[in-house]
Length: 215
Length: 260
Image 1 (cartoon, each protein chain N blue to C red):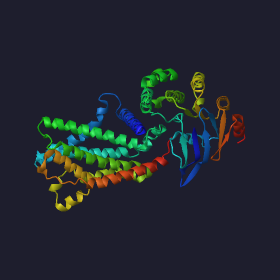
Image 2: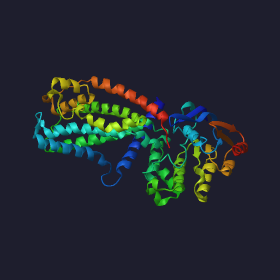
Image 3: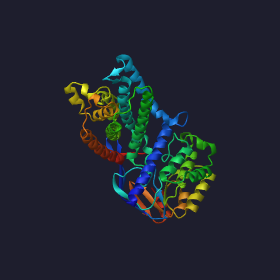
Image 4: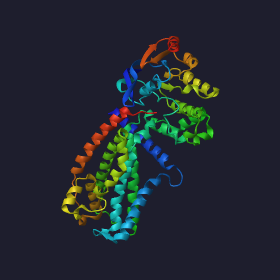
């Protein structure tokens, strides 16, 4: 279970502060797949970063009672000057898993071949997305945090993601921020709409999408 | 107890992984690879040593001049490079915050450890080379030599723990660091023996904690003939509170850190 308890987050903006999250209360249970909906700049990524522990909330707390992945996106989670292999090695080391398994999985999942020997900064965003996904799927988490990244990549990649994430790991919790309502409707059971720094939870995903559309 | 051990294991694992990562990013795998970390201090110390040798002749304070200069200069270079590496280390490594087991302190600690290991390797290397030529004596008291290094490193670590978060809080700090570390030269004890200074000057430099460490190291190498002057307690009463303040500042900065 993940509980956000009155989470607030402000950033410096000029001389003042800009409050992006104004008291988010949210509970995500084991195995629950929640969509995070909101317009650009509403605070979806910010909330995901707080839940993943990348940044710390200005006030309020986040209680994690299951293992949570780092936010899966284009950046973060890996180092641009290192090669794909070196990144895999680093992740395997800090999460204490076997590098051999990790390498095999990354090679198979990303299909990047020789590019894995090149620095990640030379990758296209599609290649980055593949690597990011492979690295985090190489480690088993109870809850995956997914920030937009699912939409990039070609057909083949999307199908693979779908298999690995929604089929093989169908029992895991997920928090998915996306603007693609088709994916959301297919893969999420409930939704959260973020508007004006406040999150509203809807048990029914169709209802959440309706509210989001009317914003 | 079990969770404490688990935490410790994770910590060790993370520090190891971070060190390998930092070494690969900084030095790559080509040619001598991570051995580059000892090249810079080595060159610094040897060149300055030769300069002194050319200017002042073979002896200083009754001991070999190159050994004297090298034994003082390498720890000083350690201090300077550790502090300059600490500047902006959180921004540079912010991406690591994606992994929750990486703590902000690890970032400071890893950079410090890499500098420490590099400079100690350079020190050992040069000591062996010089001793082959009969310049570097077998240490009079190895224990004091190591204790001196310990005091010197603790001081350096304490300063990096303060500089790292401060450099994130204020641009000015970042700009002033290079000149400030340069001003540390006279207060590092690298180029003189406290016993040879005027009493008034000696009293002043003994307020500087690294001077005590340096005197211990020199005593450990050359023995009582150099009239070492140090205090066991004073440097710690400076360094330990500094560390505590540094830890607090790191906490504050972590809370405000914006990660892309």
